[in-house]
Amino acid sequence: MLEHVQAVLRSLDVTGGTTASLMRADDGAESFSIQKNDEEIGRFRMKELPGCSGAVVFCRAWVPSAFRGRGFGKMMHKVRIEAARRAGYSLAICTVVVTNASQIAILTEFGWRLARQWRNPKTGNDVGLWTRGL
Image (cartoon, rainbow, N blue to C red; front, side, top):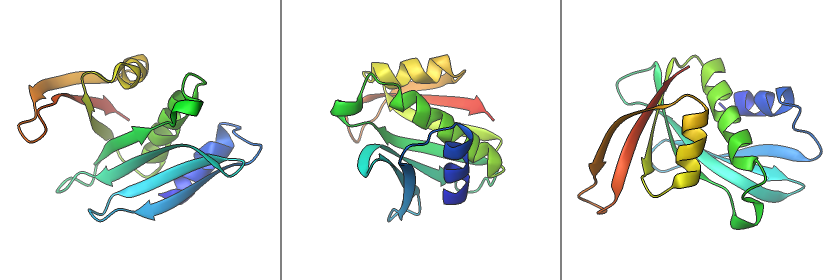
């Protein structure tokens, strides 16, 4: 998947020292760090939905506070969507805590649909399950 992420960064004309690196999480998810001039501007994780090779789960998207409000969240979202599409997935799924207004605004702007909302009994958080065709 790293090659897809890097190719998308190039195709979006994100140049000037922007790179991506991959770390494998304990649960098998691929965790990507996006850096600009050796400073991390964000990270996200992607994992194939267990039992379904056509769906990918997006999770743990994060932009450091120093870089928020500058379009990096949207840029990373574009990278995730296009990298997943290039990797052959046809459906993306993600969960978002309902108080995360920035992420919900990005999902809404990019055509995601809220499929369900519930209270996670393990964390006590109200969570939305969002889906989007690729």
